[in-house]
Length: 238
Image (cartoon, one colour):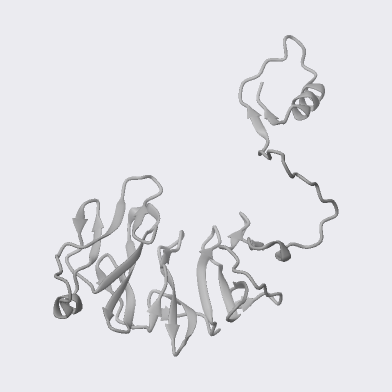
């Protein structure tokens, strides 16, 4: 949701709220700001013209959100304090899982780039940039980018893949060691398959796990594993 964030442990909830009522066509009241973020039912002490996309950092330490300060003046507020830098637009901040720095796509001079703690860190200028993700160790950043409208790909450390796609790719995913990046998107993103299985009209499930099974006195684990696999069980725990 662009208006709600919940911490990983469920102990902190951040929501976009309007603590000040606004009459219809009250332009002056609108420009003074009526929106803010409430964290566990406690609103921030400052209101903004608009607020979007709260994000909660690791360990529940920081809450960041898009805020609008003027007609075409946007930035990110972290724990109610807006960055000094202003941008033409910002989009869905995220908090690095290691170190707690805030990452956000920002629009500068008509193009998009990536900023960290208020400062642009990528030199590339893109028609669009979003879905930024960090590697598990927090050292690498990948994002969905468009070199031009309608041509999407993944950029890793500000280096876009050579292949682009006509449809929008979803958020990139890092391997556990941070060495590889996968992009989820339309079928044309996939390399040619060695084998194609037609699953039309069938139900497809992940492998099931039997977390407590008995072999009735015999311990031929290889045979038991083969029997389990034939029934759709990919993990068995004696």
